[in-house]
Length: 315
Length: 282
Image 1 (tube, one colour):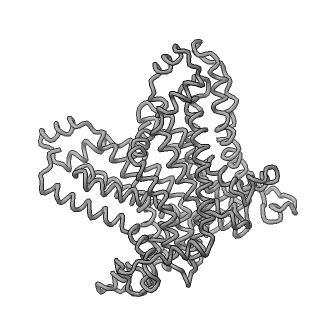
Image 2: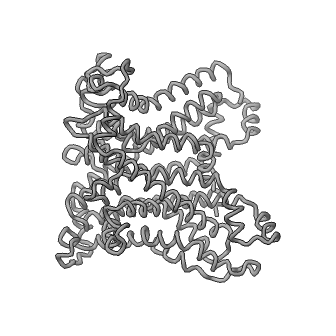
Image 3: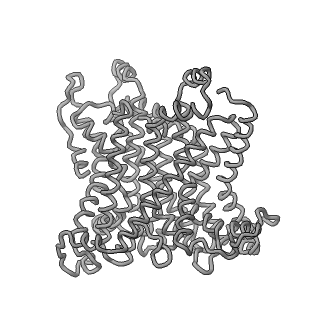
């Protein structure tokens, strides 16, 4: 990542004689974006790692106390905290539930959409676009309101049909709160999977499907043995993209569980790092959490790049 | 496809029902925004209202300086859109049309840059903006410029990645023909290439707009004390109190926040979908 800074300085001579001076022109065209990314993406990453090695609290941030280099002490501190491991476990579990939910719902609906006429399909896509475009904060509040203890529609309906949900608090229990947030996250992230997978299914040539149906293959069998393998690269991309998004959920958790739930029961890594840094003034420790998160996500990125590379000519 | 009719009819009914479920939270948001106060905080909520009122909207628009926050959000989002279009277009042209050493490396880096968990960078960016404010006040903490900068940086990698596909799709022969006709590279880039990649530009601007418009974390972190520079999400927070939430106002302000994105999205959805597919397929 740090090598992004090289972007503006690419002035190597062109390989093809026909295109002399490409290097200089390229440098000129790339310079604005390159400088910006170097300053606001590469440099902060370097800073994040640096801060994580120091005892960096409020006095240091204000410049009133000397910086003390700790080496890996913040990390040792973090890894020995029982809470860190709990939060990490919950983050992975929560993200896994959201990813699985978005993929199943999105892919299932994409298959469904490819089998119906255009009017129902259009209604489905419009609804999905609506969910997709709802800002995270607005979506969080609507779901909170639907599941509100006293005024929520869901409790009203459930207790109306005789279930014991009168004045039930969905956000009090750890699992209930995570479930509610996961439902909101799936609601606003499955449309991406739907659109991607629908494009993939539409890309399967009609002749192949006709041949299969002439050979007497059932719809179910065609889906599993022909369509699915052909859309696998897209499915892979949708999966990795969902992992990256759902692992980093911040707004929904922060808003719906009021900053991480009762006694921090619903913290995920992102919110935990934020609380440590900006509420607890432990910037060093918060940065260490950020580094751990970045490393975890970059390993997922490795998979993504490999998947992209395998899916034909991508450069 | 040869699917039997009754099967398709069932599938269509299921599709419409699911569309209804997916759209329901949005309907509920709108409905709660126009319900009169007594019907919102009611122990037996009804899925319709016979007395629509705009009380909640007027409460939102008059009480909390909502208009000011709305303008702030809009300003940040539009500046981000304009600048990210310009910068990502230039980069995409360089990365697809020019041959130079390190091109492949840069391409891989735009991909990797999309994966960086930007939320984790809140801490260093907070300090960066604090020191930047000393040199250029308009870009420091508490100023909208700081928000423009971070959202611009975070939307660029994906924008470049996406536009690259569109620029590559314009045939090289066109450029050669333009050159033969005596057009300079500059002229070709702006007068011919730029309009030709319009669908890609649309997709890029939608995503950059949404990115900046939806932001909660950075606005919350950077705008520390200057409340007149807050953006929309903070305005909604005002009505949300653990024990005494004004749900009507929360829903009305959520509606007002959703409408611009929804309109934008529906207007360009066809191009967005083809743009996304183009980017995903590479």
